[in-house]
Amino acid sequence: MTDQHAAAPTLSVVVPVYDEAAVLPALETRLFTVLEAACPEYEVVFVDDGSSDESPTILLGIAERNPRARVLRFSRNFGHQAAVTAGIEHARGSAVVVIDADLQDPPEVIPDLLAKWREGFEVVSAVRAERLGEPPLRLFLIKAFYRVLQRIASVDMTPDVGDFRLIDRRVADALNRLPERNRYVRGLVRWLGFRHTEVRYTRAERFRGETKYPFTKLVRLALDGVTAFSNFPLQLVAYLGFAVFALSVLLVLYALFGRVFSGETPAGWTSVFVAVAFLSGVQLVALGILGAYVSRIFEEVKARPLYVIASDSARPTADVILPGQSATSSSL
Image (tube, rainbow, N blue to C red; front, side):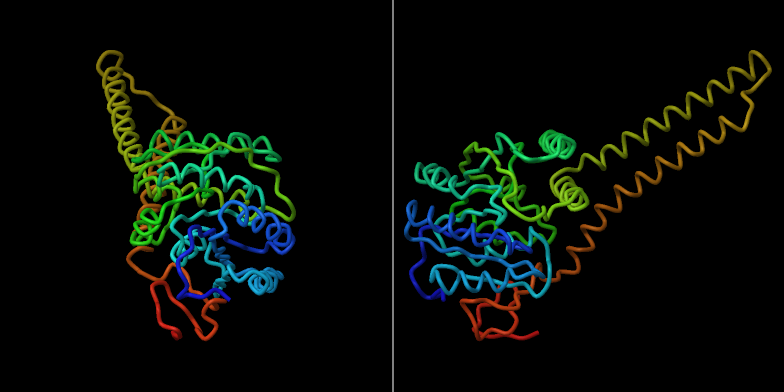
């Protein structure tokens, strides 16, 4: 088991896991082989996000075989961003790498990230130069989203960058102090600033199993990114309101002109129906955008913990662990 009081390692690797039993044996072999060669003073923090398959059992087996591995298990599925956050909060290394368990992000890129960190960079983002095995429509939508977000975000968002990156201990500590519960970690890291560089790599096809980010989850993550780092949708609603107002003024002037000069006014229920439907649609879109921002406020005001850890291989006597707790045992 991991010794909480041992000297902090040079590198911590955070691995969020959700129903990845088919991939974990290959991940263990590749990841630990790379780390032994690249940075012998390391730890690996696996965060099981409420898996329903054999992932927890396999992870505990990995921890038994590898003293530098630690397994945090959530009490239920809290989501990928919560798992990433938990891993970073429990990582002790001077540098922290976040990598998914599905082997689409190759562990063999970690030495390149470390090399840039040793040059003095505090944030090293892994940029997906190529994505293998992605359906064309999904790939198009993802690339389009990243470029739109880059243009409308209040911070510099590097396109084609996920959560696969290295951050320095200073960055990790600053990130851990941010109180937000609707986490878009890749955006929060860029918001913090610090000295940043990039490493380009080819993202592989999924090794085994199915993606844990179907289209609906991608849309939800995209909305989190937009509402967390851009007010553009709210501005768009205002612009749309002014445009509709200007159009209505023009229609009134057109009606008055026809009444004064020709003695006729535009007639017909079709024009009225189209105008009412258009205005109703505008109002519903505006309410939806406002609702997305209000929903974020509601989640923040509730101030619930971002996650609950049911077990920790490094703290076997702890019953339930909430974020920020340091006692050896706790309860709800």
